[in-house]
Amino acid sequence: MLVLAFPVHVQPPQPRSPAESGAVSATSLDVSFCKLDARATFRALLHYLPVSLAVREIMRMRALAEAGRLPTPLLDIGCGDGLFWEVLTRDLTSGRSSGVRGLVGVDISESELRLASLRLSPLGGEVHAFDISHDGKERALDDRLGAFETVIANCSLEHVPKLEVALENIKRYLAPKGELWLFVPAPRWSDTFVVKRALRALGSRAAGTYGGMWDGFYQHHHLYPAWVWSHLLKGLGFEIEIRGLGCARGNRLAELWLPPALMSFVYKSVFGHYPARLSRPFKLPLLPRMSAYLDEVQRGEVITSDLEHPEVVEYAIRCRRA
Image (cartoon, rainbow, N blue to C red; front, side, top):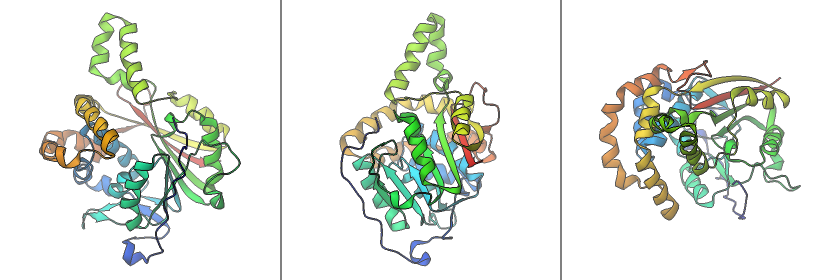
């Protein structure tokens, strides 16, 4: 549940020159690297993330890569530990991030914000403790109303109980000609699980209970079909474009490596970070076995306009003010 329960504020970094921060542009972030080399991007993710999560994360990165560059200032709702941006903006020639100057990440987790600050502050970004669904009179970042050219909610709004408040607040912070990106799970995402499909032989109740278990674990408050998201966002004055994310190979990989991901989640809950050093020697040798999936990612075959495709597990929703 996204409730801000601690008075944490991570100070933004001191102004730095583009040369110091490595930023290519002061007005946009280059997010095209995943499109150029999915293998290098995936390898960077595997250094820290469980395989199952990395399989999903790279699909989202590939969808954003279609935009090429994202205008800044950019607000990331639920920035987590900051790894997404460190990897997404990685320059393949140097192996380092090209900088995230203009990025503002917000989250409600104190431990995640500490990690995000360590990753993003040296690259020119800043992070804040902030609950986008807060409906009180006092709000952080209110000195930046209408200032953000891009707002991104990467698999965060489905966890927000007060979705209508969160969307109204996002609209307040978005610039008049700004763009909003949402990544949200498709309502039948768990139907791709081989186990759930097998349980259907015992009846729809058994299969539904299994799928509901995962929705409960991930705390999914909002699992809507594309037409519902379309209705909600158009009602707020947006023009929208929705694409489905997913493919058979990726979904099998994500399910196969879900048990180790759960153990990594427990480890992170205790120690505040994933067991990267412990798991890295076991994960990196897997890359050659995932080459077919990564080829699909690089070619963009994990993105589809067929929102009813049985392998679609998420929606990438691009919104512009009408």
